[in-house]
Image (cartoon, rainbow, N blue to C red):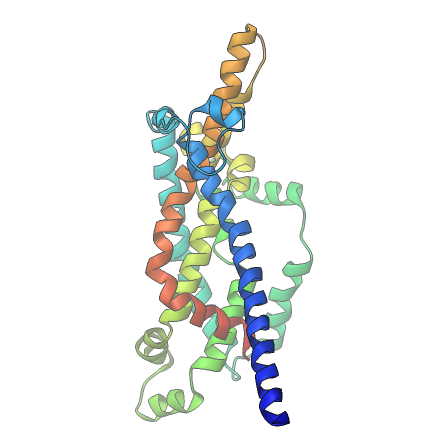
Length: 298
């Protein structure tokens, strides 16, 4: 009888524990998802309703005028095209640089491996600063050039170390030795053996670099003067600043500018985030595997 009561008590305790966990996770989910949901309903609601605080759980007086104002602008489409070009080139070049470098650093036979590790670790803790960075880019004639946005983004040391750890923990050394015995050289081992077994880390690196470049605006803001080269994020920033400007004009004009700025603020988040959100499902199945193996093992 005491044993039965003990088991019953343990079972009830488990139920309470799981119930508290579900409540906590539900609250955390709500905290994370509601801001995203609010941005969506605010973007399609009447700006006056949003300013009056009427938009809380559902859209009020649905309108797509904000999207129309954004998408009818030629500079937005040009920014989209520029960002797509920057992102695609960055991802391709980043994979070409990061994957072979990660494989090389994962090899115990790499000559000077300790030196290269220290060489890559130092920039993670120390930077030269913005002015030396600008001077270097200027001396290379990269200012006001699309490559000033792409080249500084093609290698992340953190991503490099994650790739190295993935190779160390996921590519059996015996498999590599067997390929060498069969007469395969280093290049053939890498292209015919390592790459096909590394879809997970390739997908994760592509996603990391794509999201990083898609959301980036700082390098463009520093190095680009030609508006035709602006990425989408910088174009939206300029539109938002222009719409928030209240210099001169009557009270009605200032109020209209404020309404427009408030609407564009929510619309721009959706316009800039939608492509990345659409991309994620295609790499999601590799994401957890690549991140967990690449960051925790080794």
